[in-house]
Image 1 (spheres, rainbow, N blue to C red):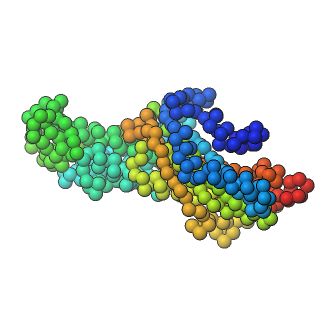
Image 2 (tube, one colour):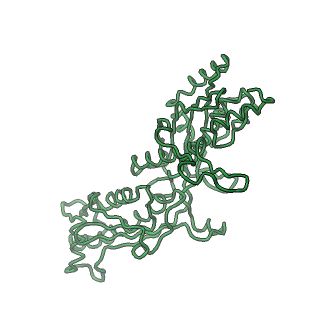
Length: 407
């Protein structure tokens, strides 16, 4: 997109605006046959440009170019749409995928009123225990602290497709929610029996079942103990409130966002420095803002590292030279800039909570934003590409190679 903008003499953001899907066009079926259910690229981009100070930075860039400043300013843009929540099983089958896209959960209401959630998706830093506890606590009206999440042991969690492709919340979390709804429906039958009312007249609100129009009520914890005791249950009712659910989504989820990077490049040494970075992502409804923020920050660190630092280096005989952390550069916090992050919210229509994936958002957007910024800074020197990682030596050699060696 940047090369096309340069060829046409247009601002690279403007050419993106002219070609993206407008928010009123959703749901939108692409030429590849995928249906994007929701999105608002305009809102995310406008917010990012405001936080970034886009016009002011473009003006500074023009001034530096006019003065032939040896330290040039580049502005990198990455507007992305991601396909997350690997599913549905029928679609995967049509692609000859080796398995389905469903996920499984089991929710157990214990006699003590505590809740156990068994999930087939296993976290490795994504915060499933916290998010799943929030979902179950909200759905069942119990304290957050009363929910335990069990995962990772196939002797206990016997079903599941696990964690990858930003599918945990949009598939695994929905299985938890569905299981909670089944638990509530079972409890409603018992509550109606205990309150001598029709189940159709029993409402659930914040952990209590109430008879509509009266003050009669039973908490879900009271019902859990009554089911355990089994002294007076509806005829034919099995004395347990446990429930299983397997969620197979109807569509993928499609988060999107706009990332902007301003980077200073010293054309005499090849040294680059990220001056500012703004990320505005739309991941639908957010269950836990802190987890989302952490996912974005980690993704940005990984993507920026790919653009600037990390590289597997081999010798002429194919031997890996970067075999230890002394040779392979992984950036620390000191090597990374401050991030300005924000969100817009366009709920997904493919799941009850309206959530979308966030696991790869930072990695997808940051690498092209950084490389585009470096190329943008060097474009007046005839540079159209710099191979990753864009180390100072590689930038300097690229500058030397253009125009017969004249930087």
